[in-house]
Image 1 (cartoon, helix red, strand yellow):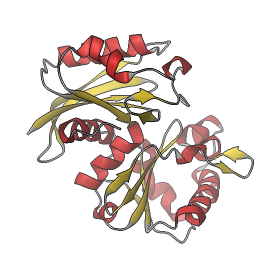
Image 2 (image 1 turned 90 degrees about the vertical axis):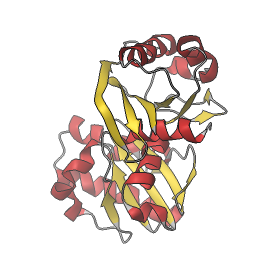
Image 3 (image 1 turned 180 degrees about the vertical axis):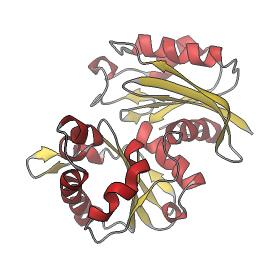
Image 4 (image 1 turned 30 degrees about the vertical axis):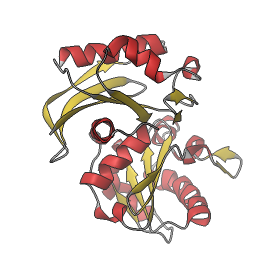
Length: 248
């Protein structure tokens, strides 16, 4: 069975047809630069352009880097503030016509894909899935079932939010070595340990590809594992969500 997922990011909007039997893309992924400013209308136009370019006429799943409740955007930590309060159903309905679609948090989508096609540990007990990128996205799972919109990156650790200390973007901006950065990440994970007592942390996002370069600096008690799905996860999770009728 085929579905279609679109992952809206700060620098690019990516879409692809997904084979739900395998979690793999059917054909090439299409990426278009995120319009600046990334207003809801401009982003929705880009989403529609990707769907049209890929000649897709079926359901579409869409991720946004925000809390989504009843298909209304509730936050805008790493996107244009004009998204707050937007009715995503109305916005994308104007551009996607009568086709079924759903909108969900980007980290939730990536986590759903990891549960379905990635590391089996995500299907057992309490697991914290984290995406380390521009910020820190999160998805909480109990026996593979999602608790949506967790936003753990906004938890204060010490004097700052977690994502302002230990995101991948912070490491790059401050030119931190992996050892220096993981010292910050350890503090964040230790706080999450105290709060949630997970069976495991699973780390996604682009930096998970380099886990062998920094994983040995981790010193939390909870096992920390790299996600098996990486840059494909958001698209795959979005495609899954619309097919499953998930509408957070």
